[in-house]
Image (cartoon, rainbow, N blue to C red; front, side):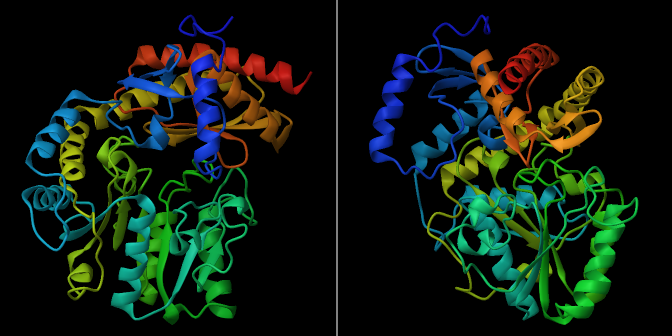
Length: 444
């Protein structure tokens, strides 16, 4: 038996027909996992073209932070569209200025004033951050982290290392990027109990001593909670140690908060959990509730060094996207950030109780509604269960729950920030049934 909301065997006939049409005209490069074809959505619920209803715990890869088609966001976009659809970034408009002011007032860098550069996506925001770091430091090298995901354009791709398939066939990317391990106490790569301290020691006393001159490093790009690499929360003190290392060597610290920012973790920015202030921050995904927008946010003393024409774009500060972002920030600050903290804590409690009964769950980790569940072979065998993870995601779809994976064998939960405890309870029922289904297939 599937979910009572699944009325048609999946994929239904309309979905199959549309997928066949797509195959003839759309690039096959998209990493699609299962045949969900969307019709419409409201809140945390979505429907496919055959009328089946699903609970959405992927939110368009953490994009639909206020749920699908939130009426306040739709109203803001509609009002903006009635004014004008586009004016290039050669000119000014109220929405762009208001968004810059709103970001400033959120204090992403504490008490230090900030400026924002607006673009269309996370990868473009990362590209802008890299250009800014090179511009203001006069340096050319960077350090990134294994498991990181920062985008697919050539500059950001040079940092992306969550899966080798993302780089396969595209070498050489931007030169000058050196990767180090992201600290993960559950899967340690260095000796010692504190992987954060070990990684910092490796950068300072091995990398800088033997391979990468610290005085040539413009920036260190890091996710304060690693996303695509497995929803890994770094050990306490690691980000503060990274800040201190950067200060010692005149390196800019760049936080990629494309996935973790704008209330996702129960605070406006994941950096606010640890009180560490970066020099540059990248935002996208959840800030627009589905509209394509990205931001490079930097300390004003860095960004104001950019001269006229040093960086720009055509669609940056699009009025519809700015309107959506302003409405999203208001909703998140007013209610959904706190909801993410409270419902996220409840969800983690439910998942950890399930973990106590399910030997295939190795670790439950995360903050707010950015939660990862790493699947393993069993209690006495921590080998990543890749096949089980893939099958589990597929079985959940057939049960009426939309999920995505990350890392080697981690199921990630990134639902809209408005979900309720009732939504979590429904999801937990579907999760346990999906695990039974997946285990039966994998061990058949």
